[in-house]
Image (cartoon, rainbow, N blue to C red):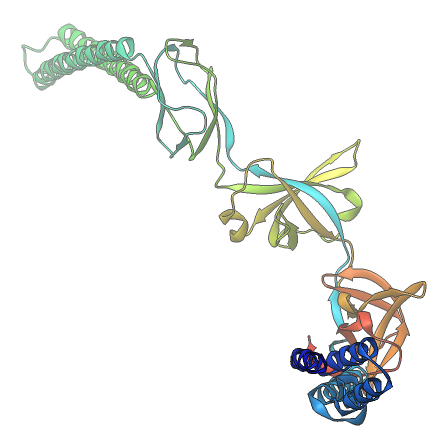
Length: 428
């Protein structure tokens, strides 16, 4: 019986060695207490004391891999704490003088230099409409065609009259030449006995009549030629042509309709030649003269330039404004603009001046006011400032800074007053 228990104990010991050291020791003590008396308990204690120390005990004495990892972790954390306490990385911008031109915004619009209704120049029915709304045409392109049959035959009729009067004129000139020759012959017979004074006078009268006939027929020929020219013009005007390049914005008639002289056919605008028109208050016209350039903005908010062409001397008595016309630069012409599109003008109201300015990124709202950080001897000094109007990406400085001060524009959100800083790169 004793040998059987010893064998079982050996099997249990083999199983315990498969467990982690600390757990094996605890299990051995528990088995000893369940199995027997004081001798077994003392043996279990001795076995527990012989087991390797736990990871926690080894860490306390500095032995083992876990202790080394803990020490390395402490070193890393202490290194991070040391780095956080170092100088903060910042970027700075210098306070400097910039030119300032005070302006007021005035809303204007793009207007075409050529636009209007294209009318029929003759009366007649429309044979064919050649264009539709939105079509782009060149100068001289045919917009509509009137029925030309009547006009063509009227032209032929006038051509016949011209030929008739040309023949009559030739006959009158021949008769005039004949009577002039007879008058010359009678004048040569004046000293002979065959000369007759009455016949001579009658011949002079005949010459005068022939001369008058030639003049009359020549006048009728000129009238016939003028009528022929008008017939040619009417035949040419049977085709309604575009007087300028542009886009058709409206059709007023259609094929088969009868139009009178001056009746509207289409409406066109020249969108390639646009000007800027703005109604500027009369008290803001002091700086506007022909040739002055203004800064303007389209819907894309990009800055463009336009030159004043004329200030129209006609004031609106209700709004107290005057129309100003400006020529846009080539950059505006290259964009996709439209007639009556809005455009913002920055009209100057005073002479240009110099102003102290600070970058917008340097400005912070703290402690109930406006502050900036200024780098002095490697430290960030907090300054209260008073700002004026915006100048592009900068603010005008009224108080608190001087020219040449280096203000923090990057990293200033986490700065503390009098904190050490390291300037990474100066921006201008």
